[in-house]
Length: 287
Length: 316
Image 1 (cartoon, rainbow over the protein chains, first blue to last red):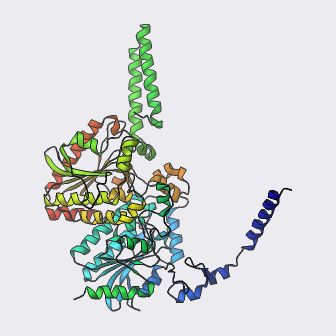
Image 2 (cartoon, each protein chain N blue to C red):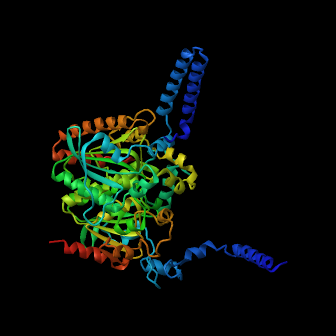
């Protein structure tokens, strides 16, 4: 046996051993999670009690739409609207799986009907119309229903003459509805035009992650654009850009800080300050 | 002209007919009846082939390197085209070209994406993939049209807005989003034509129009079939399957009421007879402008808004 053979054998036995050792008990993985920011092992409960922010380094974990509404809206004031609008499969789209069954799975997983929750509620006493996206529902992608609900929420803001708040988390337009999804970009952006005409204050909160067709429509049309700390925001995905330009990208590319440096967001907010930031902005626009 | 794979049988038949003609001439045997018969059959085959193209074959035609581009159309269907350069903020993106021109008896503002016909040209025009500044230039020209009450015509043929570092830094998303919103506020007739590739937000950024037309073999989609294949089908080689699934042809878009009309192409596609294509396009665009000019400013805005407001498929 040569020396390299010996190393090779040792390496293989190590790999084999490691793969049997890493059979982690599912209950343990439910109790613990690893921070993307500082790599610390954290008790899930500690993170949840801290608004899903790492107690050690302050890294902001992604949160779902229900959690977001709990954190932003005054208790007991949120009234969900337009939840009756349901997704169909207009293109009879099938990829590795039928679109309808993907939707059913996403519904079961999240307990939501679609990737956005819309409604009205109060933020520190100010009545607002809200659209909050949920990344856990098919990557927060925008199809016909998301576009329609966001538009209806904007029309509700005009009707009630109250500020409009959109909290975005999305991979972009939903491919399974193809051009119908694409047109939701136009529809929602045109609806923002109506907010302009009615002089409605429109605040967008871009959260981890906001990309593609949502970035290229209502998300970046806010009168005030807030990026949540640690959010990654962009038009094209990192991988697409790397493949196109064939070079690696800076580590902080498309982060909230990066975007702020290039003049694309008004402010970056930590999660604990978000509610106050929004209500302060509304207050400063109220006579 | 580059012959596409699926067109090869057509050219094989034609060369056989030519051989037969030569043989007939050199041997002095009269085969004119047979030749005529073959030619008729070949013509039928051709008609049938192009009338029943798969989405994938349409894509090949839409991407054909000889397909007329924006400047070709300016040459063939307008008079007095004067290019107006620059976004007024430091850049003149070459992937989007715009200006003022006359189409028939209509004075208009024209804006479109420009593709090259070879690598050298494509390096100049960035393969028809605009930077954010391209959309900013377009918007400046739209405001110009609005000020002087000139109808807007946009011609779109793009694989998408450019995905690059600079584009992200300047704000590709914001640039497109602002065009979508601002186009909804314009008080002049807007006619948008997808002349080749209509890929994603990069195409839509010029297409919030009163009338959206597509050339017969153009395609319009939320994502390129290649991109869709690698993400959803987990295999970039399944692009033709994705192209079928995405329902990207002009006929599909018309069925979903996402476009307003289809402009017929010469047999074999626009590149087989660019002038005929330009004439068809000119007639269609002029027809739409004349129809839209009858509407008041308010009606133009409201009907454009209502059209996009209704788009989508859901139940409640």
